[in-house]
Length: 215
Image 1: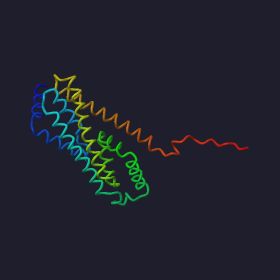
Image 2: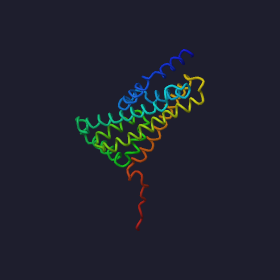
Image 3: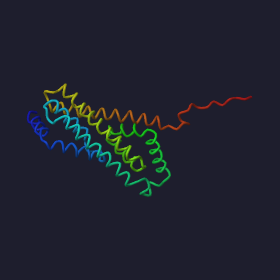
Image 4: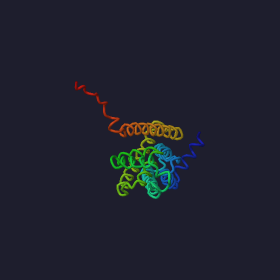
Protein backbone atom coordinates (compact mmCIF):
# COMPACT_ATOMS: atom_id res chain seq x y z
CA UNK A 1 0.00 0.00 0.00
CA UNK A 2 2.82 2.41 0.86
CA UNK A 3 4.51 1.74 -2.48
CA UNK A 4 1.31 2.49 -4.41
CA UNK A 5 0.74 5.66 -2.40
CA UNK A 6 4.27 6.79 -3.19
CA UNK A 7 3.71 6.11 -6.90
CA UNK A 8 0.49 8.14 -6.89
CA UNK A 9 2.23 11.01 -5.14
CA UNK A 10 5.04 10.96 -7.70
CA UNK A 11 2.64 11.07 -10.62
CA UNK A 12 0.51 13.81 -9.05
CA UNK A 13 3.58 15.95 -8.38
CA UNK A 14 4.79 15.87 -11.99
CA UNK A 15 4.18 19.06 -14.03
CA UNK A 16 3.14 16.83 -16.94
CA UNK A 17 0.03 15.76 -15.06
CA UNK A 18 -1.80 18.93 -16.16
CA UNK A 19 -1.15 18.23 -19.84
CA UNK A 20 -2.35 14.66 -19.28
CA UNK A 21 -5.56 15.96 -17.67
CA UNK A 22 -6.17 18.35 -20.57
CA UNK A 23 -5.66 15.61 -23.18
CA UNK A 24 -7.81 13.04 -21.37
CA UNK A 25 -10.68 15.53 -20.86
CA UNK A 26 -10.41 16.65 -24.49
CA UNK A 27 -10.53 13.12 -25.93
CA UNK A 28 -13.38 12.17 -23.58
CA UNK A 29 -15.48 14.88 -25.24
CA UNK A 30 -15.85 12.76 -28.36
CA UNK A 31 -14.66 9.30 -27.20
CA UNK A 32 -16.56 8.38 -24.01
CA UNK A 33 -14.53 5.31 -22.92
CA UNK A 34 -11.76 7.67 -21.79
CA UNK A 35 -12.31 8.13 -18.00
CA UNK A 36 -11.91 11.88 -17.54
CA UNK A 37 -14.23 12.05 -14.51
CA UNK A 38 -12.26 9.36 -12.71
CA UNK A 39 -8.97 11.12 -13.41
CA UNK A 40 -10.12 14.56 -12.24
CA UNK A 41 -11.88 13.22 -9.15
CA UNK A 42 -8.93 11.06 -8.17
CA UNK A 43 -6.38 13.83 -8.65
CA UNK A 44 -8.55 16.27 -6.70
CA UNK A 45 -8.61 13.82 -3.82
CA UNK A 46 -4.82 13.67 -3.95
CA UNK A 47 -4.60 17.46 -4.16
CA UNK A 48 -6.32 17.86 -0.82
CA UNK A 49 -4.62 14.89 0.84
CA UNK A 50 -1.07 15.65 -0.26
CA UNK A 51 -0.98 19.12 -1.80
CA UNK A 52 -0.22 17.85 -5.31
CA UNK A 53 -1.36 18.54 -7.95
CA UNK A 54 -2.36 22.19 -7.59
CA UNK A 55 -6.16 22.20 -7.34
CA UNK A 56 -6.89 25.48 -9.21
CA UNK A 57 -4.59 24.39 -12.06
CA UNK A 58 -6.28 20.99 -12.13
CA UNK A 59 -9.70 22.64 -12.48
CA UNK A 60 -8.46 25.03 -15.16
CA UNK A 61 -6.86 22.34 -17.35
CA UNK A 62 -9.84 20.01 -16.91
CA UNK A 63 -12.27 22.79 -17.89
CA UNK A 64 -10.27 23.73 -21.00
CA UNK A 65 -9.98 20.11 -22.08
CA UNK A 66 -13.66 19.40 -21.50
CA UNK A 67 -14.76 22.49 -23.43
CA UNK A 68 -12.44 21.71 -26.34
CA UNK A 69 -13.62 18.09 -26.46
CA UNK A 70 -17.29 19.09 -26.52
CA UNK A 71 -16.63 21.47 -29.41
CA UNK A 72 -14.74 18.78 -31.33
CA UNK A 73 -17.82 16.56 -30.98
CA UNK A 74 -19.93 19.44 -32.30
CA UNK A 75 -17.54 19.86 -35.27
CA UNK A 76 -17.72 16.13 -36.03
CA UNK A 77 -21.52 16.31 -36.05
CA UNK A 78 -21.40 19.42 -38.19
CA UNK A 79 -19.13 17.70 -40.69
CA UNK A 80 -21.24 14.57 -40.90
CA UNK A 81 -24.57 16.39 -41.05
CA UNK A 82 -27.94 14.67 -41.11
CA UNK A 83 -28.05 13.42 -44.68
CA UNK A 84 -24.50 12.28 -45.46
CA UNK A 85 -25.45 8.60 -45.53
CA UNK A 86 -28.47 6.88 -47.00
CA UNK A 87 -29.72 5.54 -43.70
CA UNK A 88 -29.95 9.11 -42.39
CA UNK A 89 -32.47 10.04 -45.06
CA UNK A 90 -35.07 7.46 -44.04
CA UNK A 91 -38.33 8.87 -42.69
CA UNK A 92 -37.89 7.52 -39.16
CA UNK A 93 -34.27 8.67 -38.80
CA UNK A 94 -35.06 12.05 -40.32
CA UNK A 95 -37.95 12.42 -37.89
CA UNK A 96 -35.57 11.55 -35.04
CA UNK A 97 -33.17 14.30 -36.09
CA UNK A 98 -36.08 16.71 -36.33
CA UNK A 99 -37.15 15.87 -32.78
CA UNK A 100 -33.59 16.26 -31.56
CA UNK A 101 -33.30 19.67 -33.18
CA UNK A 102 -36.65 20.69 -31.75
CA UNK A 103 -35.50 19.61 -28.30
CA UNK A 104 -32.29 21.61 -28.64
CA UNK A 105 -34.22 24.66 -29.80
CA UNK A 106 -36.66 24.45 -26.90
CA UNK A 107 -34.31 23.45 -24.07
CA UNK A 108 -30.83 23.51 -25.56
CA UNK A 109 -29.16 24.95 -22.47
CA UNK A 110 -30.65 22.25 -20.24
CA UNK A 111 -29.66 19.41 -22.57
CA UNK A 112 -26.13 20.63 -23.27
CA UNK A 113 -25.30 21.53 -19.67
CA UNK A 114 -26.72 18.36 -18.12
CA UNK A 115 -25.27 16.13 -20.85
CA UNK A 116 -21.76 17.29 -19.82
CA UNK A 117 -22.17 15.14 -16.69
CA UNK A 118 -23.07 11.98 -18.67
CA UNK A 119 -20.13 10.42 -20.58
CA UNK A 120 -22.07 8.94 -23.51
CA UNK A 121 -24.88 11.48 -23.31
CA UNK A 122 -22.63 14.48 -23.87
CA UNK A 123 -21.16 12.98 -27.05
CA UNK A 124 -24.62 12.21 -28.45
CA UNK A 125 -26.06 15.63 -27.62
CA UNK A 126 -23.04 17.58 -28.84
CA UNK A 127 -22.76 15.71 -32.13
CA UNK A 128 -26.49 16.10 -32.70
CA UNK A 129 -26.19 19.83 -32.00
CA UNK A 130 -23.56 20.11 -34.71
CA UNK A 131 -25.39 17.88 -37.17
CA UNK A 132 -28.67 19.74 -36.86
CA UNK A 133 -27.15 23.21 -37.16
CA UNK A 134 -27.53 24.42 -33.58
CA UNK A 135 -26.03 27.90 -33.15
CA UNK A 136 -22.24 27.57 -32.87
CA UNK A 137 -21.89 30.74 -30.76
CA UNK A 138 -24.57 29.63 -28.32
CA UNK A 139 -23.09 26.15 -28.15
CA UNK A 140 -19.62 27.51 -27.41
CA UNK A 141 -20.94 29.68 -24.58
CA UNK A 142 -22.87 26.78 -23.05
CA UNK A 143 -19.87 24.45 -23.25
CA UNK A 144 -17.65 27.05 -21.60
CA UNK A 145 -20.09 27.16 -18.69
CA UNK A 146 -20.58 23.40 -18.70
CA UNK A 147 -16.87 22.61 -18.87
CA UNK A 148 -16.04 24.88 -15.95
CA UNK A 149 -18.89 23.73 -13.71
CA UNK A 150 -18.12 20.08 -14.51
CA UNK A 151 -14.46 20.55 -13.59
CA UNK A 152 -15.42 22.24 -10.32
CA UNK A 153 -18.01 19.56 -9.52
CA UNK A 154 -15.59 16.70 -10.23
CA UNK A 155 -12.92 18.35 -8.10
CA UNK A 156 -15.34 18.95 -5.22
CA UNK A 157 -16.29 15.27 -5.22
CA UNK A 158 -12.62 14.36 -4.86
CA UNK A 159 -12.03 17.03 -2.22
CA UNK A 160 -15.03 15.89 -0.18
CA UNK A 161 -13.82 12.30 -0.10
CA UNK A 162 -10.26 13.34 0.69
CA UNK A 163 -11.48 15.23 3.75
CA UNK A 164 -12.81 11.93 5.09
CA UNK A 165 -9.85 9.75 4.12
CA UNK A 166 -6.97 12.21 3.93
CA UNK A 167 -4.57 9.85 5.67
CA UNK A 168 -4.89 7.22 2.92
CA UNK A 169 -4.50 8.83 -0.53
CA UNK A 170 -5.04 5.57 -2.43
CA UNK A 171 -8.22 4.74 -0.53
CA UNK A 172 -9.47 8.31 -0.99
CA UNK A 173 -8.92 8.05 -4.75
CA UNK A 174 -10.77 4.73 -4.98
CA UNK A 175 -13.75 5.98 -2.95
CA UNK A 176 -13.86 9.23 -4.92
CA UNK A 177 -13.91 7.43 -8.26
CA UNK A 178 -16.67 5.05 -7.14
CA UNK A 179 -18.72 7.97 -5.79
CA UNK A 180 -18.30 9.86 -9.08
CA UNK A 181 -19.53 6.82 -11.00
CA UNK A 182 -22.59 6.51 -8.75
CA UNK A 183 -23.40 10.23 -9.11
CA UNK A 184 -23.01 9.97 -12.89
CA UNK A 185 -25.39 7.01 -12.96
CA UNK A 186 -27.98 8.90 -10.89
CA UNK A 187 -27.71 12.01 -13.09
CA UNK A 188 -28.11 9.85 -16.20
CA UNK A 189 -31.18 8.15 -14.69
CA UNK A 190 -32.86 11.43 -13.70
CA UNK A 191 -32.18 13.08 -17.06
CA UNK A 192 -33.55 10.06 -18.94
CA UNK A 193 -36.74 10.12 -16.85
CA UNK A 194 -37.23 13.86 -17.31
CA UNK A 195 -36.51 13.66 -21.04
CA UNK A 196 -38.93 10.79 -21.50
CA UNK A 197 -41.63 12.68 -19.60
CA UNK A 198 -41.13 15.93 -21.53
CA UNK A 199 -40.98 14.21 -24.92
CA UNK A 200 -44.47 12.76 -24.67
CA UNK A 201 -46.84 14.16 -27.22
CA UNK A 202 -49.72 16.40 -26.08
CA UNK A 203 -52.14 13.62 -26.93
CA UNK A 204 -50.27 11.21 -24.68
CA UNK A 205 -49.97 13.71 -21.85
CA UNK A 206 -53.58 14.86 -21.94
CA UNK A 207 -56.21 12.94 -19.99
CA UNK A 208 -58.54 10.77 -22.06
CA UNK A 209 -61.64 12.48 -23.29
CA UNK A 210 -64.92 11.20 -21.96
CA UNK A 211 -67.68 11.15 -24.58
CA UNK A 212 -70.64 13.33 -23.66
CA UNK A 213 -74.04 11.80 -24.02
CA UNK A 214 -76.21 14.38 -25.81
CA UNK A 215 -79.33 12.27 -25.67
